[in-house]
Image (tube, rainbow, N blue to C red; front, side, top):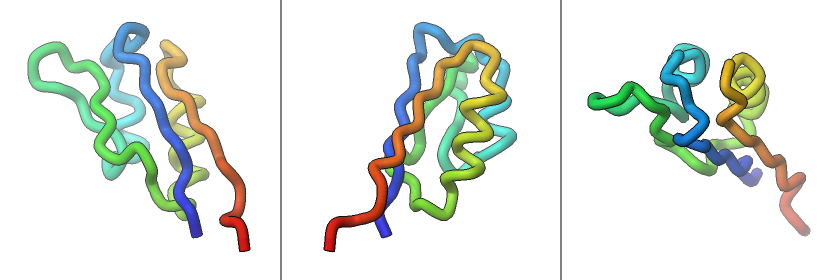
Length: 73
């Protein structure tokens, strides 16, 4: 199984931390500004639902999730 592609836009991030609360294995916040830090840019497909939820609850819309689909045979 492949992973999903996750990108964050730190310029848009407000530091609300909803992503970290939703999927701490994928997102964190930096110590200085509290802005999003992407811990895992290609999380396993098993986390797709949680990562999409994190993107959906982000008040700034700073998270983009791309599902490349199933691996080619």
